[in-house]
Image (cartoon, rainbow, N blue to C red):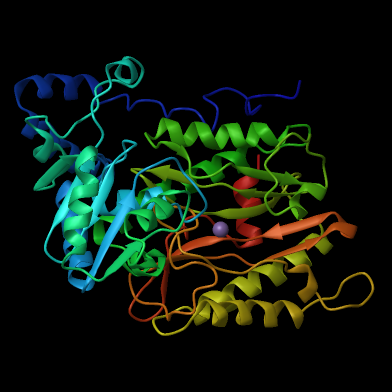
Length: 450
Ligand SMILES: [Mn+2]
């Protein structure tokens, strides 16, 4: 078996928990008994960054309930003569309809229905099932005394009341908005065969695309943890290690930081596997001379991030790898340079593709554009492929969070390279949220040095 730990002499593995501070621990404990406020003050005085981090992560573990209410108010103002009906259920295609339900309700238990109109907001909850509760614990139901407080809704009704309330809403509303997935849309159509049933995806997408300060903070947190995860993988990287071991190291960092885990199946593709866009077997033993594509991001507090780096297993890029790597990096810089309020996904695609197609050559002297086989950007949020989608034609707005991820995949050279950052669109450009993880090849080599 290849080593499972960093083989660098003594001390804890680079990816393990950090040693506790030696000097002040006993003193902290003593002070804690005297007064909680006092200890917090002392933490600020001694380790301001650590204390701020503790406070921030405590406050922003999840989106506050009041914000879900604010989101519904924003939606209701834009509904006009439409009734919006959403169903909570198992995850589906991306961006997930269940995430749209969660976005507007903060509710993630199955079997619930949301009905929104300009005038009312109702959450319908399924009846309590003692058999199910044996397995999943207590579930809220409409008859509970605390149902309104727990859900944050003024009206919480049993699902059995949905048909009657839906019919009543249609007396004064012309249109129905719903997500056309599964059989729920068909059920609505059967209940109101003469009414216009419209796809709510664009309506909800417009709401979800621009992130609130709380959402931005959660995505920043997921990003910071993922940056640490990638750095830990770089430290551990060595020939003979298996791809899944790098995935394990990164997942450890995420769980250890209190995140839910990976936002998506980790992609750790070395050598030829780096040319497979959604490779997730992570089963190959890595060799000296391979490049490895690591597309790995965490989910923290319900929010995702999406980061890819490509690094040499040996810790050193060879000349051809470096040449191609720098072309992808140049394409990413070109992509980042065009992202600002008013530009579009297509502008980003064009900037990256033009750069790649005008730099470097393949083995036959051909242009490299044909080896860039995917789009360059998509929104990131509750779903890793969030709004705006990669095919959105809407201009970017400040507050959107998107990726910039050009790549080159050349199977005949056994080289795959992707560089992906998650970025916040600002008033005048972008802030690279994952900028703490270097893309510069010399800096990557330095961080990988044993
Ligand atoms: Mn991505």
